[in-house]
Amino acid sequence: MNDSSRTGERTSNATTGSKYDYEQGPPPLNINYDWCKACNICIALCPKQVFEPDRDGKPVLAHPENCTQCTICWVHCPDFAITSNYK
Image (cartoon, rainbow, N blue to C red; front, side, top):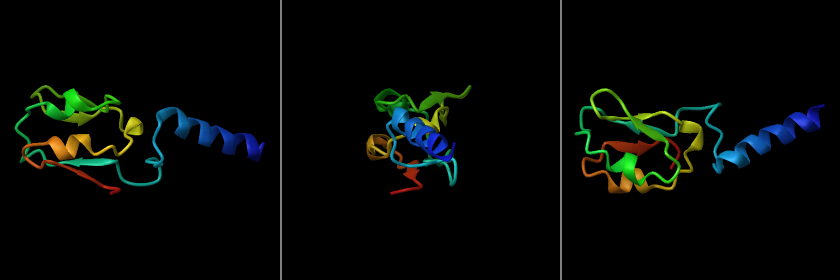
């Protein structure tokens, strides 16, 4: 049974497309809400739809397990409000 549980872990990681395991550490991204002006560029450009807007329109990590650390969100953030916890 150990092998099947290990295979299940690898499969779940492979299905998200991420090489990082976010269950054991911090979330993949950090959003500085004091700097964020809710332009939603990160939401629009994220290929894995990791973000969703909150009631104020600011991005929230709705699906952090899907984050592949592609760098698109923090490179295109005009306010430098998004940083990675892994890169």
